[in-house]
Amino acid sequence: MSIRKARWKRFANLAGAALALIGLTFVVIQLRRYGASVDTANVSPGEWMSLCGLILVGVGMNACLGVAWRSALADGGAPVSMRWGIATYALTHVARYVPGNIFHYAGRQAVGMAAGLSARSLARASLLELALVAMAGALLSLLALPLVFPLLMGYAWIAFVVLLLGSAIWVVYRTLGRALTSAFMLYLLYLSLSGTTFLVVVLVHAPHDAEAGHYWIALCAAYVAAWLIGMLTPGAPAGLGVREIVILFLLQGSMDAATLLFAVLATRVIAIGADTAAWVVGCALRRNTLPPEINR
Image 1 (cartoon, rainbow, N blue to C red):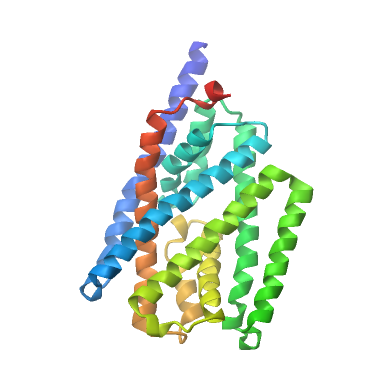
Image 2: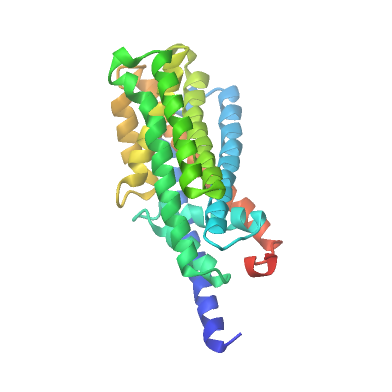
């Protein structure tokens, strides 16, 4: 390895590590901010256990994103091991909390280039991730339309959206191939679980405030819509503030205001806790994982 290449690799590693550490700093700040806003006095021991369980689920959801990113890299001619892909994604994902909402992509770019992957493959994977996540989120958000247009409330609309989802999967498979279809389905799974997390928080905290049946699906989809708008808002780190405003707008009047506020804040705390826990897991995985150029 030339001296110049060695210096670049060291710089890229340091840049990736710095972004991750800065991200963790903002995670702590936001965790304290949101944690202080949650009314813990009315949280029962059973609710605490449920919230901790949802954080563990969130770590698994983070792994889904890592596997999807690995699929996008493989499609671009940069195959990496499953373990390295998940670990690297988890280590860099916390940088999304840095103001600017782009530093998690920059972190993966730096770490990947330091590991010997091409800049073009890494940039392509990030663009595909953004496009496929936006597509998945937009389709799932259609299930929230009955909250705005009550005439759509019912299983016929749900069946129509499910048909659209199936068609989208088929189109992605025919145009982009198997690897990116796998990534797209993982993004659908991640967003579905995100919405379900919000629903579970509502059901555990105040089950009488959430009607049964198709309303649950609209509730989950409302959270996905808020998540998507937050992600696409320039400068909003991890959609902070934007996501909360959208979900409060969509669901105001649908449930008790105190329940809605608690669910919004608690879900954000769960997400931050899950990202932090995933970072710890990523550190452990990375320590015992070979770099991608050796894995290949």
